[in-house]
Length: 625
Image (cartoon, rainbow, N blue to C red; front, side, top):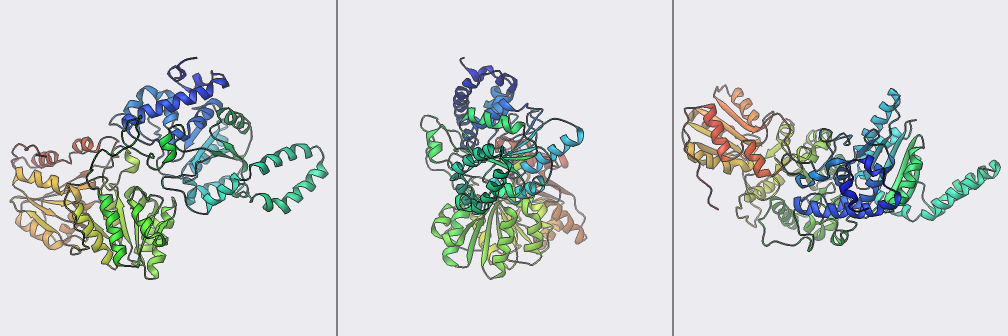
């Protein structure tokens, strides 16, 4: 049969294939992934690694009636292709197109919306309990990677599930990778399990033979308990109450079908250990799965290559600052929850290995670990995405802020992130950090200021978040020194009249362009907490109207802080708060989305004119590049 993939519009079509056709389908599916992701960008090596597993799951299970819950979900492109979305793959991660992650509103085959790690087992267990309670015969399957298995939530769920009678299958996709190289005791443990295949096969065969002779079987079980440690370590999964199967070859699609068919009929909590290779089938991705984890567009014939000198990003500014400050201060310790590359810490990890700590996908641990370091006089810097700090909110309040410990939080991906969509959006951190006592919140407007505010945060005696967006800013030259800026002090960048625009973060430059057409004053606020009350009062007394601009949510954000401060000072003044509305942002090109949400110079000027029609705006001039 030719062009198997074009013929398959749903898993029901897949089930009509003979098993002999499945390897050919896997090859076609892999070619389709290379074709589409090279054109759209997106997660690549993780999807190449799950091709055979995805085929086998839909071949054996009755989806969408049976529920597949993909952990993180960045490996679900094959799943999308096989569930009727093949023709839409060209729209992947584009505005109005397919999400890069599972979304319930996108397809009935997406049983649970994901994008943050380690949630699949909890969700699938909830589904299994619901199936039992409602008398449904549906199956619940969680597919989780070895990287995601480093997070405590996965073990909380397994601890609950293993002590239950519910039918739940947990599949560990073990590719020896998360995003950064894997770390921790669990990774070493899985490596040891890999060496126990002979033991597992021998045990299974022996049990089949001895079950016909109960006394001998009982004796064998006793001897096994006494000698098992000499052959293979006890599996933690069995200790948690799961029946363990594996490891099995995750690229043998027919073998996977055999295994899944048996487990499909087996009651109770089951654990299947599948070994795959990230980047499978595309040589360069196999050699460097980290580089190909989430590439942009590329030529499949040549792979990734430099397209010339790229602008310096905020992430790179942080990475260089981190190394420079570490050179100066031996107390500095850097921590990341499995995001070394994404947070710009590769150079630091190589230059200061004893002061670099990748704790795995364990944000809660990362924050409290930093608190412990700070208690003993070290200076911890936690590099973490804004969206992932949400996962450690209790630790941020209870373990760091309550004790007023001097921990610096470098919040990458603040504001709109674009193609990764609402699950990765970083527009809530101002709101959820400024309400915490003892916390300061810095909002650098450009690359130079980012470095300066990181240095400032490092000198303070309490916790500070320094938030900055993904990608490059306006391209301000970055000094090599470690100079600081005054804590809690703003700066007037443009003097106008009538309207004063108070800008927080990178939108300062859009505010400056808008102000030219409105003859407005512009203030670079720099700090969402503490606010510069002196400048705020001055602006309120010398201007008729105030406008706040931020790349965060309006609800509880920096603009709300300005309103609170004015009220506390007894000043009544018309204030327009511009930011993201009370809704989740969609995925797409960041420039297009910023325009849609009115956060460009044109959008800001238009909002002001709509709010106050007497404020005249001249036509916006095109930016000269």
